[in-house]
Length: 299
Ligand code: GLV
Ligand code: MG
Image 1 (cartoon, protein in one colour):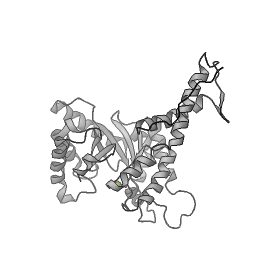
Image 2 (cartoon, protein in one colour):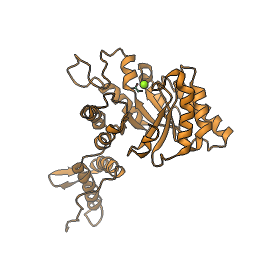
Image 3 (cartoon, helix red, strand yellow):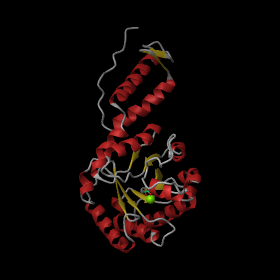
Image 4 (cartoon, helix red, strand yellow):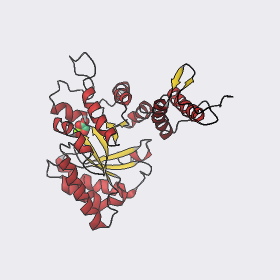
């Protein structure tokens, strides 16, 4: 798996020492991860390691082993089951001390905070603001469902009996608001039915529609679906670029210095430009190419 991840078109790779690793195998997982990071081949991807959460006996040794062993080849530490801002501060302090003792640049390695229980969610604003290292807030649906006693075993799908709306809407929105307020990434968690790519698309589509930046993949078969769902549709990307070009032209002296103009049947103004910027930025980041160019009209 560590090797296969090198060749996949994913934006990030995260290596786990937490719930996908049995307690007896954790020391060996640390060693394997350090070796894989130092061997390299993950260039162009955010290189992240998920350590165990602070309620266990493993967190400090995970962080020390990974950062002392491969601190130069690591971009982020993922902290699961975060419940309070203090837990982020504790990780930040430990990371800073290791960076100083190892001669690593202080503050370069980021923190990804996974929200996986009710306490984490009610504290998510403070968690997002707890350290300048925090880059990402992640929804951990499996642990979260267990934490709130949700009556289902199928991660991310609406529980049987909930036949109205989306049972995850509040949680996703709560996380998204904290992420946007503090300018962080909002990332959706895993979909465990790895052979059901349509199911992946359906669940991913909900968080993507709200504004999430991406979702975990557990298997190579989910990567294309993720890249597609979190990228704009081609027609929306083209339209966003058209709005940006048109608005730039019409607000200029040559275009008449207008703040609100008609683009086809639609009125566009400064708020339209801001919306278009979001879609265009996502499309450009995904390497999309626009289909049509803007030709300034004769005014
Ligand atoms: C991921 O860690 C989850 O609990 O969903
Ligand atoms: Mg979890």
